[in-house]
Length: 131
Image (cartoon, rainbow, N blue to C red; front, side):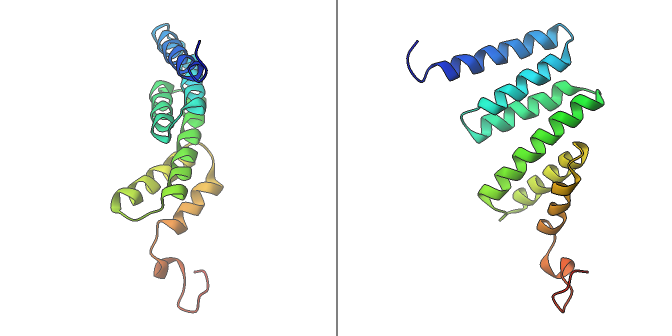
């Protein structure tokens, strides 16, 4: 195997494994494999795609949804921190990340979005004090 080739092969194996787990009805295994794919993804888009797959396969299982939601919310938060908030699309991503963090029981990080997502005059009083 060529140097630098193994991560791509490993990602493909995890992708196939997640499909096999899902077809067998073992959704916890599918979610685990998608989370592993996300951790090794070479790009942010690959990571977000794998985490969205994990959330989709979590179904209605509360523990799996919480785990996948927390991971996707945190990844979206990292993307917002890295890229900034300039457009309505960015603000939509912020709202989605906050909703996912709440679903994943990460209320402290989700609370931060309340301040990031609001106009300054709503969050701060006229004297510079927090309302």
